[in-house]
Length: 268
Figure 1 (cartoon, rainbow, N blue to C red):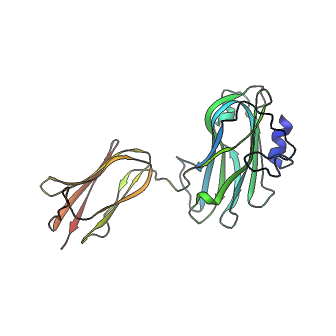
Figure 2: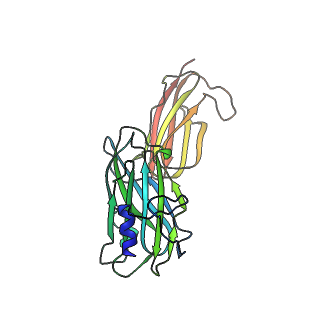
Figure 3: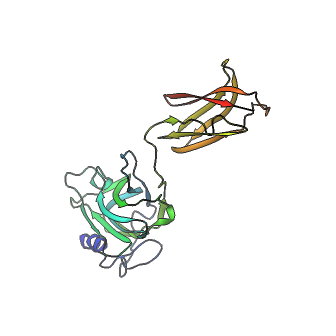
């Protein structure tokens, strides 16, 4: 089992996933506890962003009696420069273990990073959790099509081997670190304007426009929104679709414990 994971990391003869490759050649997939387990690649959250640095994390879902894993992350080398791969702090494989898992990584093949890890304490883990963090240098906005997970294998406590076939590329765009309601653009405006806002986490958002008397003019948003950078357009009409008069209007966003107010001017 240990040899299997080390070979995976060093690219000596394993592959997995839906497409056979150089990593899993010669491996017999005997079937084990992890036929339904899957990997998710997404941008690392709650990390202070550095200019020109992209951090991605791979997590596993529905692991059962997981002893070890190995896979290859393929990336567009024309856009990204690989820096390092490391186990995430408090990763799933180290859970409930006094001894950290054996971890190896190799980027001998251009545009690919092979990683693998194995518990060495005779135990196994089940559940969901993060595994690996990859760091790249780039000046471009990451796209899901820039990355692919290949040749994945999972080994359970009894030695059963499963190919990783459930793979998801999640959110790679940068996530905001705080709530904010931006100034509308253009301002003054006629006939419409765009309001930007950002959410560091999902929540129930309300964005309402008022006149200077405090009367509600139009509710632009009243729904649950995902975390991220968002925008909404106001066309200068009220709830009934009627054009409002020129003047100053107030718009207010509230979500969770956050509230912010901005002013804008409609000129005709």
